[in-house]
Image (cartoon, rainbow, N blue to C red; front, top):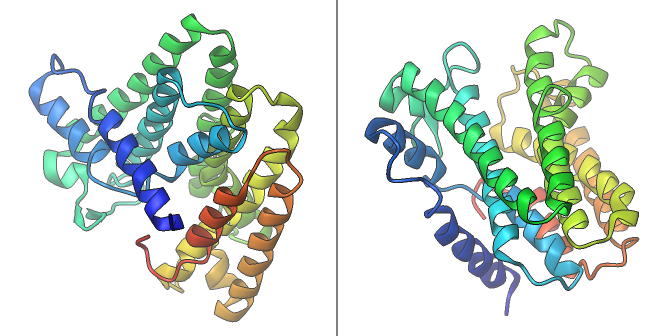
Length: 276
């Protein structure tokens, strides 16, 4: 089976699980807004990274792991809903459709983001009660998503006045890289391979920087505060190739069978369109 067929099978199976987590008792407009953004497509990269690490270590994916994967996606989507707001990035479209606040209004969009964040930790707390290892995972994810991670990256972006190389790398590492770190490290913990957490953190560092750099190369808005605008296309493409090579090299150092993860890395990080 080709990589894309395997990826689509994994993604489609995850999508079916994701559809089940929005409670029908949620007030109708809020529920509609949550479903609009959560079920509105996307690559599902972060939850699939978590599941791929489990597969790489030969661990069967359990229902509890699906809950963790859904929680990770809830956190990612909540961040997108809030990032799109007029007080943040002020975007009108996401994935080819009106952003949540354009569809439902700013008030509902704020509440959708809040609700998705709470749903993520509801899912994580439920599995942590069942197995203590998921408490470690919940702590890892909350740390990476919060003020020392993804949220901290967004804050740093708004506080920064000098978008030099150091600051841009810091912002990318926090805003993009930390939830990728949460996905990979959590998979390592769930697989019972905590002795290799350091390697997965290293993978996530290179992967996160590369993923953001690839996104910026595809965006081609040279007037924005990005490494591509700072370096230019040729230097950025060389840096991207170097980051991808580093990602693949560290994957080889783990005891996991990372063949699928290496293919996934190349497909995502060297893509020439925003689709997969």
